[in-house]
Image 1 (cartoon, one colour):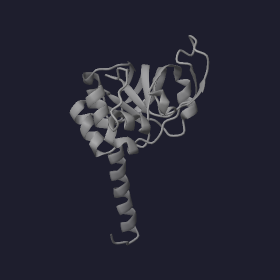
Image 2 (image 1 turned 120 degrees about the vertical axis):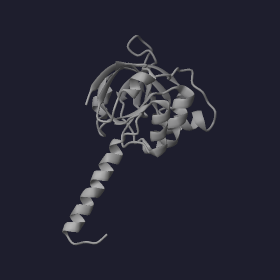
Image 3 (image 1 turned 90 degrees about the vertical axis):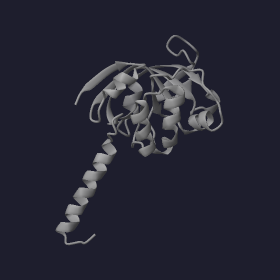
Image 4 (image 1 turned 90 degrees about the horizontal axis):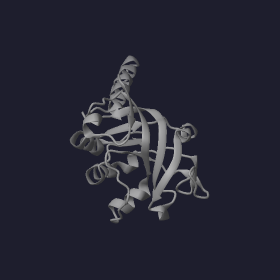
Amino acid sequence: MAHYDIVTPVTEEKVRAWRVGDTVTLNGTLFGIRDRTQIEMFDRGRTTRFDLKGHAVIHTAPNVRRVEVSDEFPAGYAPLCIGTTTSARMERFTRPLMEQYGVRMIIGKGGLLEESKAAFMELGGVYLAIVGGTAALETTWVEAIEDVDLDDLNPESLWRFRVKGFGPLLVAMDSHGGSLYEEVKKKAEARRAEVLASLGVKT
């Protein structure tokens, strides 16, 4: 297993070198995105002024506070709690995020499904898992909210965070068809079968 300390954006070549079980720490820019953001972008034709090519997006709708614009708070928002939400319900947006906007990394919890796995393999991307319930820690990795777009959707706006030492995050799905979630499922099913057999239960 390898660890990668990166500054975003990254190339397809770099992402394709990562394998399930590796870890990644992000520095630079990270974009926050959620269900409503993507519904507006991909179902209703709205676009963003942000360049997402080579970047990571994190599934989040952060808790923020409006403040005066300053060097510390360039977008007029102070981050209070930036937690990660479950990814599976946003499965259908993985491919358009990659095809239309060039996103390389998706960060969330709980994993993604077959369509996303196919998109990662074809287009060169990864799913980076974060442990649930760590919002307080994640927030310490965010240096500033640098900008925000589609802000009428707040808190499901498109957020541009400046991050430092964001991680380590676990490569849970890679561009080679690897999926930690499938591995865990197979092991759990095999163990279940063993236990049932030991009890004399026929399946």
